[in-house]
Length: 375
Image (cartoon, rainbow, N blue to C red):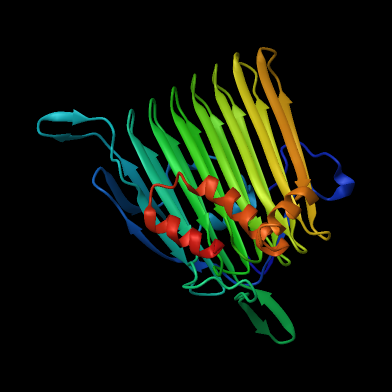
């Protein structure tokens, strides 16, 4: 693929409000992608190996779409998998209590990594992916916005990765994605998954990265009573840009999905969230919920949201709710009376929101890194 071009990602499932230019995102790519550096730590009950694409992974669609898939096709993947194992003569159906931890870092101008997660039937596994590195000390005044100068042109560095998940019958996959500051000016996270009968995928994302962050998620609830839940917390400040595209396809009967997004926009930050619940013909009894809470801490922030419910089936239930607001004067006055400045108050509120999402991450070291970024 010629990568000295713009790629189109995060296309909305059904175009709407075309004149507002929110149906998709375009990202400039000025360097050939190379393999990113990653360190994988596995507990007992999980395995890992490097593989090329196979039929099972090719049928999984991701949230960013075909341009990202074309880039990903040039790379092999690290496969993380669970299996049944025996201990003291009895079969253990729960793979492990500890998570696999993947640390992803940038070494060039355009870095890419690919991970496949496979949960065997009736097993459960947790995977934590950390992109970037937490600062030793928090610095609210400066940040490392790495760029490369090529002639007179300023080129942003890119760190990208793709994750595909296959959850067999009765299994559960919990994926925790953490984007820390300093990982690159442009960050791309592309996720796709398939849930078979009575399987579940749970996604938790904490986005604290600086610069432009693009996230695409597409989950296919293929089996009866399969489930998907996502919890997203983000903090965007300065001139940061967030572009999110989440889609859930309800194919199986009595499937359930719940998407919850909570974030803070400060300074000149901008954000767009595309949330799609797609009820496919035959998914009787399916239910999908989508909610968003946005706190605006600046007069120049830009907040855009596109909730979308598509329906080919009558016996379904889809819900969307959004709450957008600012810190009210009473709250600021209350805190000021206790010696807390307006700037510190904003920081406290932002920290509380992010920590409420990060609290469930099953790795103490990662939680501490997030706290350092918020300090």
